[in-house]
Image 1 (cartoon, rainbow, N blue to C red):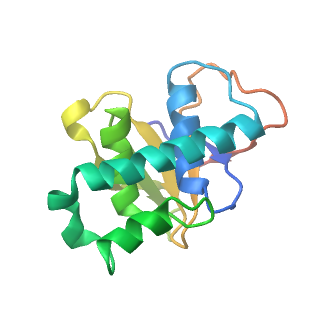
Image 2 (image 1 turned 30 degrees about the vertical axis):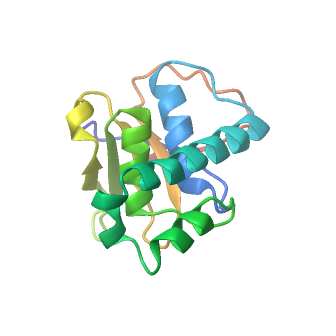
Length: 160
């Protein structure tokens, strides 16, 4: 991984995991960043497909969701409910692509891989998200990739 990454801030509106994955998929494919409104719509569509994927894979997923499975899926369809590891796994299946989750190391501020999902769909060019450890996700991308984001859509910071 390059030493410097570009961190793209995602609003903390309950959709951050889904917005990070959607934006990561768009930017990875070379598309221009969708508008703020489109990001919300696409994130909510992905969330719905993820809930459907939980139901489709119930036999494999029921054991690792908290509480009652049916209630969990109903709650996950709501736009303000946070997603986590189970949703990242289902996102990888819905999008049929790898997703890599990074965190900053406290002492060095360098990034480390903490989770990888969807490796069966290929390991090259995964969607890369940054988890902050308190329920929030942002997007990561390499600085070498040509920047095609529309100005003012996202907060961009360099991560050492």
